[in-house]
Length: 223
Image 1 (cartoon, helix red, strand yellow):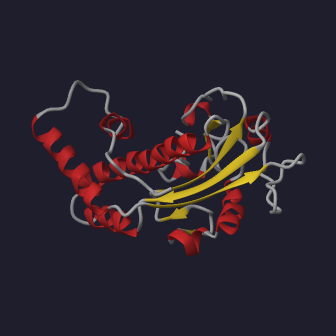
Image 2 (image 1 turned 180 degrees about the horizontal axis):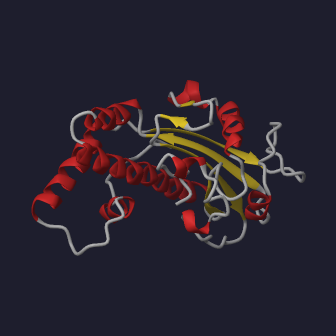
Image 3 (image 1 turned 45 degrees about the vertical axis):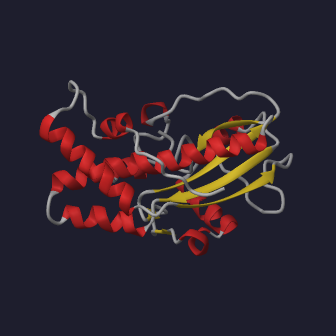
C-alpha cells in the first residue's frame, strides 16, 4: 500500500488552528487555500507498515516487542493481530514550514496546521486501504506511543521493528520525538469482530498534563 495524500481536510485544518469563528471568507480563505495548495505540492508522503500476530503474552510474533501500558493491552484485548504503521510527509514539508517561520509566522502557523491535518489524512487513507485488504476482518482505531499510559519511549521499539529511519527517513530526537515533525507512528488492532471507536483527542488522554507532544505544541497522532 502506498502513502496517499489526496486532499487536506479543511475542517481539520481549522480545528488545529483552534478556529471557532464564522465561515472564512476574503483574504483569510484565500491564504488558507494557498497554504493548503502549497503543502500538497511540496509534501512527499511515505509510509512503512507490517502485520503481526499477537501472542498470548502480548508480544508481537517474531519480535521481542511488548507494547507497554494498561491502555494498549485493553485496546487490543479483542484482537489477534496488530499492524505497526509509520508515516511521514517528508523532509520537504518540514523545510517548507521552517522557511515560512523565518519570514511570516502567520503563514507558518497555517502551514503547520495544514501539515498536521495532512499527515492524519495519509494515515486515514492507509487505514481505509488496509480495511479493504483485510476484509472481512475489522480494525481498531490507531493508538500511538505517548497516548494514554503508553510511554513515548515505545517509539524506539517501533523504529527498530519497522526499520523506520532507513525505510522512510524519519529519525528520533533524544526525547523520542520524531523528525520530520509531521510524522506518525501507530498500532492498529485486527479482530474478527467489529471494534468500538474510542474517545479521541488530548482531552480523552490520561497523560495530557505531562505530554511531551503538548508541551511542544504538537500531537501524538491520537487526535
